[in-house]
Image 1 (cartoon, rainbow, N blue to C red):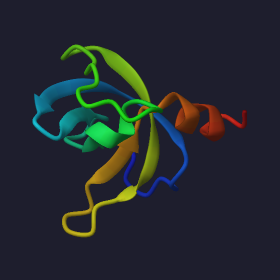
Image 2 (cartoon, one colour):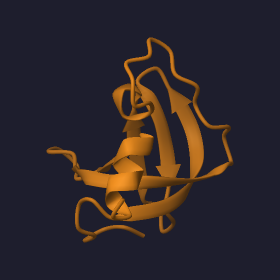
Image 3 (cartoon, one colour):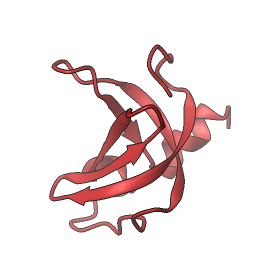
Length: 86
């Protein structure tokens, strides 16, 4: 679970579903985070590849949505490198 986690932390979860705007990652205890299309690839890609449903992924916690407090996540390689101190 990532409730209360500080932004810029690296987290792990499992892809639960794809949406038109991105995909969702489950972190346990009914906590889902959202990865929007612009947070998938380093470069602007019109239609980036989404990870398979059920696959485990690493993501960077960017913060929380204003309404509902849902975790906002990034799987962009440059964000992951930055989160691990690279």
